[in-house]
Amino acid sequence: MAVSFKGAHFPPDVILMCVRWYVAYPLSTRHVEELMQERGVSVDHSTVNRWVITYSPQLEEAFHRRKRPVWRSWRMDETYIRVKGQWYYLYRAVDKTGQTIDFLLTAQRDEPAARRFLTKAIRRHGVPATITIDGSEANAAAIRGDNEAHGTAIIIRQVKYLNNLVEQDHRGVKRVTRPMLGFKSFAAAQDTLVGIELMHMLKKRQLVVEEGDEGLTAADQFYALAA
Image 1 (cartoon, one colour):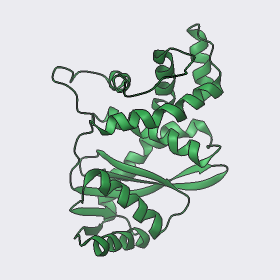
Image 2 (tube, helix red, strand yellow):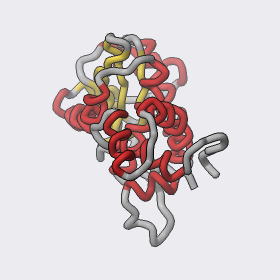
Image 3 (cartoon, one colour):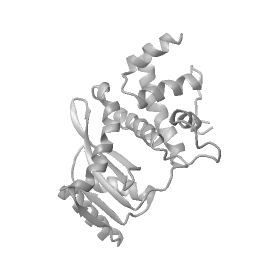
Image 4 (cartoon, one colour):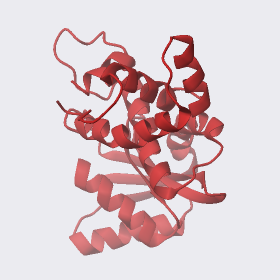
């Protein structure tokens, strides 16, 4: 199996349902606990949280083996996520059609953080032809530095209205994180965001499916990743 449920005290379908609800909808873990109780399943909200942190990275790993290729015209931006009462920065990029490229949570919003994000995104998707950013000099410096370090020629475009696409896309993620009222730790935030971004990509049909399975819902695709 792509996902290991070894040592779990609940059936995989119960675990996956709880994880999916939490990362797909604006719910707290206590909401998920109540919804499961209505279905006759007693599961503590802290257990739901632990499942999200444990299984989201495994599911994302399975997803990336079957992720659709992205276009080489990227839109890069960052948004804010509260962790331990402090604001952290979620770097995100989408291509020109709005497909998610990658994301990275960082403590700082500066050139080294932007470089780490670029390195991660390029390692997964190859070198883009252009990256559109807002007026952030840190992001521009990161792209120039990456070009110099690797001999690439990524074109930097600083056109505010063209970046509306990624700014609008942040909303799909922020809508789900809002009821969470901030994360207790950086690691928990990171792993939970992996699940939220995964579900967001599935809703955008970014998973390559077998012929005949084109009609599968995002929920079906989510469960299939664990098979």
